[in-house]
Length: 121
Image (cartoon, rainbow, N blue to C red; front, side):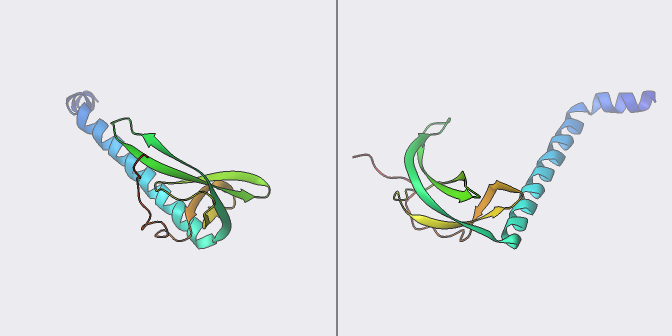
């Protein structure tokens, strides 16, 4: 028992690193699983861009984010895209029926050609 305590005390930082790494891997695979589940179920909704603005990063610099709204059973949910998209633009998303807040773009490359930023007038 003393040997185990000594080992843990000597390798505390390595053990902590491995635990953090294991949690990060679990979070990554869980989000991947949820995304695949959404794409498999294909519950579709149409979102409309209603807001677009420039937001500042905590490290400096800024990025344009456009927000679309979609409705599931009369409740509105938002979806955010990092691109300058004209207000009123419609796009399709897939959502998880058990939790409509979890959603993905139906076409992940739909906004690849839109600029990520625009110059101020």
